[in-house]
Amino acid sequence: MAIHRPNNLKQVKDIQKTLSKNMSKTSEDEGERTINALPDYEVKTMKDDLAELGLKKLEREAKGVALEEITVPDEGPPVSKREIAPPETLPVAPKRAPLPGTEELIKEKEEIEMPPVPEPVLEEEEAPPLPKMEELKIPEPSYVPAKSSKRGLILRGIIILLVVLIAAGGLFYWLGRKTPPPTPTPPENEAIMPQPSALIISVSETKIISLAPDKSLFELLKEEAKSEQPIATFKRIAILKNEREFFSASEVLKNLEVSIPPYALGDFGNDYNLVLYSQVTGKRLGIIIEVQNPENLKEQLGNWETTLLDDFKNFYPTQVPGPRASQTFLNDAHQNVAIRYVNLPTSTLTLNYTILSNFLIIGTSKELIYTIIDKILGIQ
Image 1 (cartoon, one colour):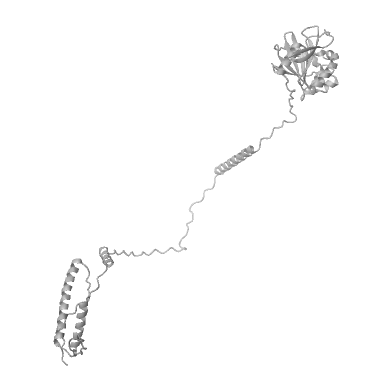
Image 2 (cartoon, rainbow, N blue to C red):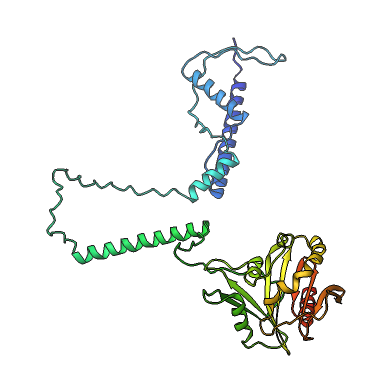
């Protein structure tokens, strides 16, 4: 069977051209690699694969291996297999690696620009061995503790005592603010000074007298009437019964020997004022008594008028009244207040009485009773 030699030579020439092209391309790539300072990578093409396949076939022919039948186009005659002498050894193109991606190029550049600095390895020093517990011994004290002196003990005691006293004082002060102080009670043997009844009219002076065993109340009033007293002023006389109480109104009248009818005595209240009035013609005595039923007493006083002048004979401490100048009591009025009176030989001496509000007023001159009425009404 005939062999078509020209076809094999053509294939060999094509392979050589391919190799020369690859070699020239390789040199160009190396130039670009040198310029770009990039690593060598091989670009694998279809021509390289065909050249590699032709070389493998030539190698087989050189070793005496029978060639397989070569398929030719339908136009020509079939090609037969024959042994061919091995051609000269051709250089084999080195394989090229694929081109790296952008991320790999940047990573490689960073690794080149910033090489890692190796950390120095420090050699661990061996710690000294711990001392054994047996070897640690507490040294014995080389001194003797000082004993507390007596002065220190005394000072400490004083400080503690002061702290206790301050705490106790603060506690007592706090308790004292919480509870009001108790009302002091006078001792039993201490004398309590009694107080006379309340004032009914304003006076310039209050004189307290006590009964003497050798003097009557009338004699004491006569002595008091001789003392100095400004004109048109009142002096209150309070009679002390004992160390703890004063005379009441009924007791004063009884000591002056005044006979009080029972209907009048039952109406007397607790408050009264026995007063001395100073006028130009002498001292005049009068009494103001609180009454409980003034309207009933006003009706009963008409019956008392028959003995009233004789009953009050001791109400004239400075002058003797003498016989009456009028047989009956007459009517008078001051500040629209009705007054009953009886005339005496001396025109400056009278016996007057009236009931004003809830007070019974008895006096020994018109000036006296008029002034008392003015004070009760608040005119003076």
